[in-house]
Length: 152
Image 1: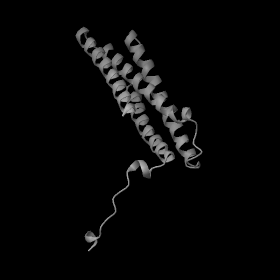
Image 2: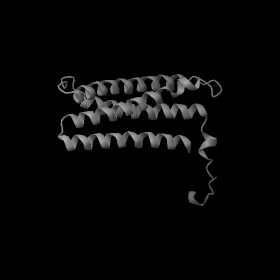
Image 3: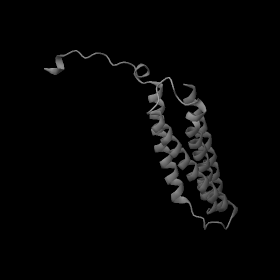
Image 4: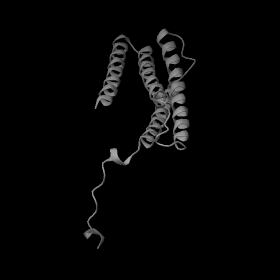
């Protein structure tokens, strides 16, 4: 039977995946995240909400968020497509490869600001404070997780 045949131990991922393939995979992940953040932002975007300062801030930030997310998705798609035609020794400069990460990080930060301002704009005083506090905590959490994950 097949289950009696001894299988070789799998190689660790770090030895199996080339740097080019890691970047192609990351570009795919960035595209998915950008689509999610951009979609959430676009669903809340309403250019008619401009009666209060917080509504104006949220409208502008939602607008900037889905544009940053779209840029991230397009840039990461083009980079992944071009990486398919490169060799492992001929990668793009590091600054080009991390550009979609930066765009996605900007989109996430702007989304947190936008959703916080949006929630605070239509609320009573205590609820406005709650939205602002949780928005700030979300921003700090996102930054902390990103910093932590880049250190391990």
